[in-house]
Length: 409
Image 1 (cartoon, rainbow, N blue to C red):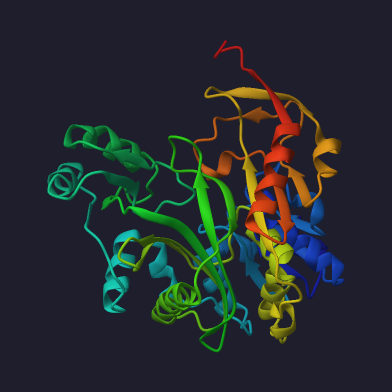
Image 2: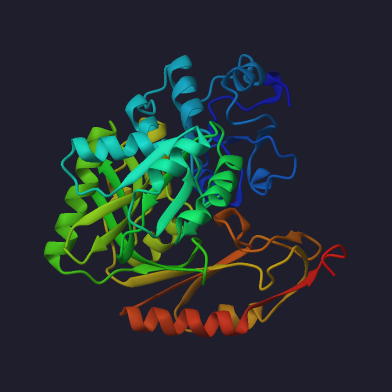
């Protein structure tokens, strides 16, 4: 689409994955036109946008060229690391009220993040990183096993391997390098403790909304399957919120969203595993709405447009909530034949939403990374047990029927 066909005073949304659909829905609810940017011609959020630019979200110059004389009213990115630098570059180019902070880009480099964590006085753990496979293997061999080997600039659990012995390092390092744009690998000591994630939306350097959640992984993989609001003591909540706020300030995030994966260790210290200086993916905004009645998507759009956003973050309820992320039942490539039990699952007491990202005929990959999920279920209730019961019942009814592809057969 050429610049003279694009709507003026629109919200430019960098990304059109399924994770971005709530951004388009919220903008349409508010009567704000949207321009979607994504290089995929079949991006699932395109039907929700008023116009589309089919180029990479990493290419700021190409986006500006496609916009032509069209000047956006605001620019926003959702649950994607790929667009964060572009978000900043275009914000400066168009003189937006909100410009993504330069310092926050450090959070995309796992080695640099370790240095930021140390500078904040936050508890850390052993790690080694290098773009030389031999060097990282040599350094990693001196750490405490098991180790998590990852691309230093990766996200979504791509290329992550748990290694229990030094002889497993070469293969894990080769896999991680394949997923790294910089060909750099980091090995980190595995931290035993409670797997948590914390989301914040900051206003003037303080969290206006904090939600801490437990994570349950897919068996045998470093991929999240279920996320649910955590029961913590007030002291634990204050400690973890304080850690996250300190890191946000170090990353230059004064206003806006951020989320961190962390482990609450047996010593009571929260240790940061991943930093995501942006809105959460995996339908977490839906969880926040179900649990607290807040609208972080609405707050982000208001921030991007230079409008007050406090009202979107004022809690209207105090419930527990959870999200079940649905993946293929197969460990091989497949094709979705159909979904069974959709209506029955929607009617389970406590279920607040079901979204299906794959349709019959779509290719379905093994659920070995976050981007391979094919749907999600959200539930809410007065207690974690109520939420767990609702999700368990819903996933027993909602079944993706996936057939192996001919090659796999």
